[in-house]
Image 1 (cartoon, rainbow, N blue to C red):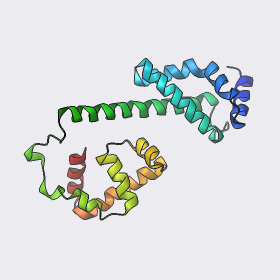
Image 2 (spheres, rainbow, N blue to C red):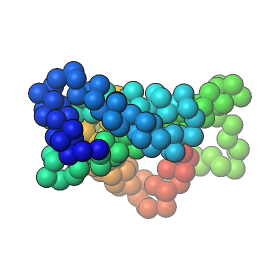
Image 3 (cartoon, rainbow, N blue to C red):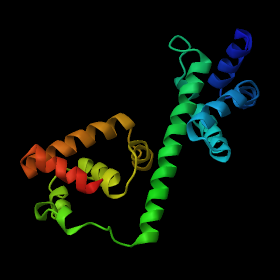
Image 4 (cartoon, one colour):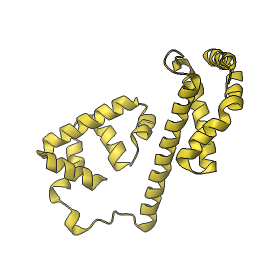
Length: 188
C-alpha cells in the first residue's frame, strides 16, 4: 500500500467523504476480514465483524491521529477489538439460550446457596444508581463491559471505574473480601 493512497484515504475520512469507505474496503477489506476471521473462526461472523468495523471506522474517523499510529494499525485494532467483542457477545448469547432451553430458573445446588447473599438486590439498592446500573447490567443481564458501555451509552473506561467502585461499595455492605468473592461467584 503506497503512502500516497493511505494519505488520500485519511484525508477523505477526515472530510467524511463516502469514497473513503470504498477505498478502505478495496485496499484493506481482505486483510481486515482475515483479522476478524482469525478471532471468530467463522466466515459469516467475520463478515459481520468487518461490516461493524467499517461502521466504527467511519464514526470514529475524526479520532484517527496519524502521529500516533499508521492507518493500518488503527484499522487493525478496531477490527480486532470488534471481533473480540462479537465473539464474547455470541458466546454470551448462546450461554443464555442454553440456560433458557434447560430451565427458566438457575440450577443451583442447595449447598452453593449462602443465605447472606440472598439479599443482593436489596443491598444493590443501597448503592448509588450509577454504580447499581452498571452492576446489574454486568451481573444480572450478563452483558460484557463493552455491551454495557454501548447499551448504557457510557464510555468503557467509566463502566470499568463504576464496576470497581460499585464492587467496593458492596464489599463495605457485606463486610469482608471473602463475602464479596462469594457474591461474585454466585453471580457468575
